[in-house]
Amino acid sequence: MKIVCTKSNLLSGVQIVSRAVPNKTTMSILECILIDASSGIITLTANDMDMGIETIIEGDIVESGIIALDAKIFLEIVRKLPDSHITIESDASFKTLITCEKAKFTIIGKSGEDFSYLPAVEKEESIVISQFALKEMVRQTCFSISDNDNNKLMTGELFEINGDELKVVSSDGHRISIRKMQLREVYEKNKVIVPGKTLNEVSKILPGGADSDLTIYFTAKHIVFEFDNTVVVSRLIEGEYFSIDRMLSGDYETKIKVNKRELLECIDRATLLTREGDRKPIVINITDEGMELKIDSALGSMKEDIDIEKQGRDLMIGFNPKFLIDALRVIDDEVVDLYMVNPKAPCFIKNEEESYIYLILPVSLVANYSR
Image (tube, rainbow, N blue to C red; front, side):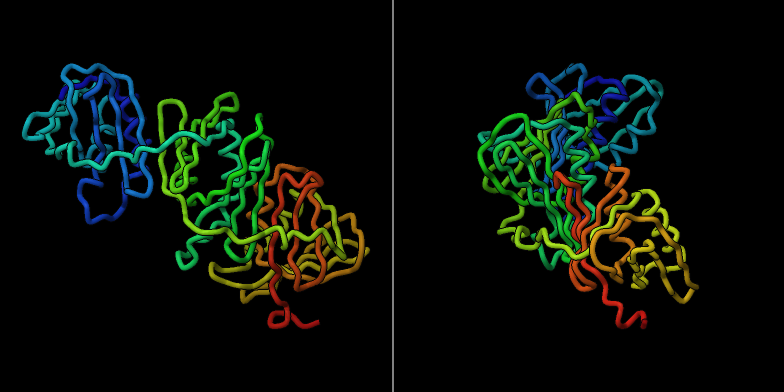
């Protein structure tokens, strides 16, 4: 095999597929990137058996063939080569020569025949959305994906299609994030659970243009993301996602309307007095006079008042400040509405259209504060 391409094209492609290279594996071939120039185009592929990425790059094929190269070494070599044309040439013994201007690297590759290609997926059920919309929905929900493998379902996000609406849901057991968007067409009903790792990696490699689309294909066991010259194939998480509709009650005893930036900055200031790992809640006391936020820790205490519009009863309630910060940071509205029932019931942050809903469980104040 012998190919020639620019550094920028090659580096971009290698960086994209490298996200599917496993950190640890007992199969050394999976630590490689496959360069396939056997069918008239140059394709780069990486696959960790749960998620695979394939991308096409521009370049000249002098001699067709395939080779698998160690991903880590290959990426570092390409990254540090001059900004010029790169030639990659391999022989029958898999010895590979990488040249760029006066720089020459020789590395030993592996047979491309041993590489695990991406699974063939039937592309029947699909939706089309903008790249920007998908990146935004992942950004606005991924923070509440659980990192605890004990509950596999919570390490992913629910993608639910209902006619012309896409709903994305994530939860770690302490909070729920929901985002909804209107689709351009009406589609068949469908529900799948997509691994959080897959969504994070797709979000990172998506260019994200508002005018650029991607197609998402669904099967019983796989999801496929197709955009530009790149394909990402991932296994789905099997199982039935927990029912969230019964938790989304419209009842409330206290509703406040507050400036999002003021609330976010106040909570952020309060966390200056907490160490990583602390479980000190931020206490919110809501009265007709306004809303007081306070926190007490081993480092000190802090109090601050914020102006609000209030409906309903007075309330004192506590929350993990990080959970509030995570939700508020991804809301674009200038003013947000918080709905609460009592100190032990979830708080809802949502807009009137319910295009976003963030449910956050409160923290018991009994062990932390006495009135």
